[in-house]
Image 1: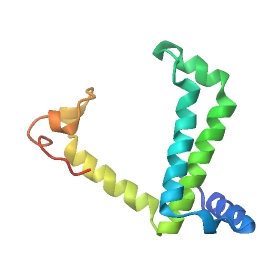
Image 2: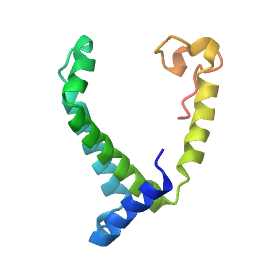
Image 3: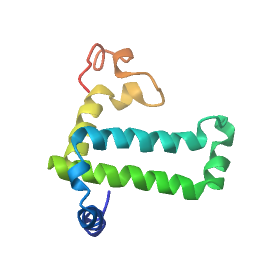
Image 4: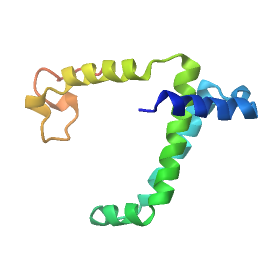
Length: 124
């Protein structure tokens, strides 16, 4: 998702300011929630049919909040020693088993509400 150069720039920015000392799994996860909420706040009370125009009007704010989420996620992934591509692909494989195309296509139902393949499974 992020290039190696961008990821290195993010980590250098933090290192230059000696901020890693303040970053734990809890503080980074908390900050991710806050930044995601700030992204949501931009469109929170907007009717569905007005979302596209609202996002267009406030594009700079949306971009800033998305960047904050990405930066914090980059710190968390780095600090936990995770391979983001690997964990995302593993999650996609688990989701594919829980949401078979033939049962999940075009529906927003949770996997527990789908046919026998996904029924009763709660491993996320």
